[in-house]
Length: 100
Image (cartoon, rainbow, N blue to C red; front, side, top):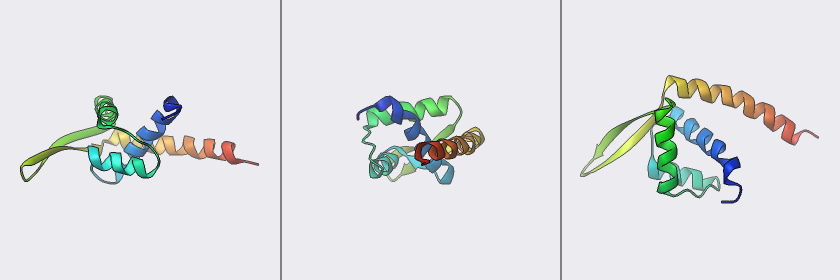
């Protein structure tokens, strides 16, 4: 992905947006991000999820599905507050980027 450094924040906002709406898991969010043109491998995504959890934006738990277990992430109160703050900044930036 070209200019990866510019997209990292957008990817984190996407993750947070979905984790506020409902619990997410790795493969599911990789597929969701791919629908928006972000091609992430598990080796790229999981460090982002772990970092967001370590910083208090997400919390995770193991979910058992038959013989398979997967880690499921949800937004914390800090994550929800951060997303709301970020939405305001994105609206402001969007207005500047596309004003004519």
